[in-house]
Length: 216
Picture 1 (tube, one colour):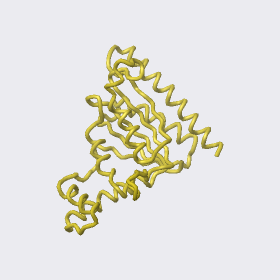
Picture 2 (cartoon, rainbow, N blue to C red):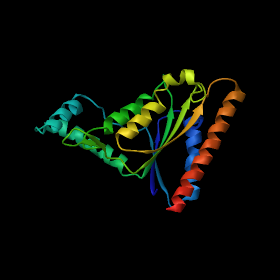
Picture 3 (cartoon, rainbow, N blue to C red):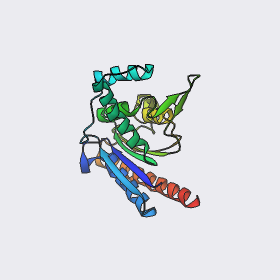
Picture 4 (spheres, rainbow, N blue to C red):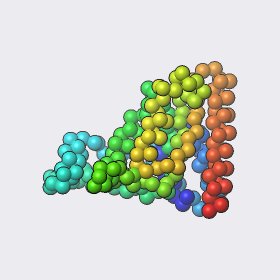
């Protein structure tokens, strides 16, 4: 991996649990590969374009191969630029807190902006979907107040990690790794234990990825 995009979906800065563990992953990967170039996009600070009527109507026109008005074409130029930027990286590290069993709205907004035919996937003549982001590595640091991954009876409420894994698979990514930070709400000792467990998993993942890179 030469270039890594860190997609930060938490607005909490230094208080972010997912951000803390992602920082550990970044430090480990950078130590193992000093040439690694890391770029961070803080979604709550990023100037993301709206996905509004111009983009939506333009989408249908472009899919049908019909001319679109200049304002719709301009909206799609922005989306193509975002998707090309996303696809220009060898891997992505996603810092993601759970909000209401799912994703922060800014991350869903970003995904909606870049997930379109010809940008991150395409359909062949038979209607089969081919992901255009294949061959990359994705690391998801998923934080949640509830202890998902340890209580099967609640795992059906996880629309965070399950959604991201499904979306990444749809755009062609098969090398997906996840570190859970759960649960992050409760007595101090319970939260500390969850953070320690996530930190150990992060170190193990860094060691695994570094060893794999060294063997290539």
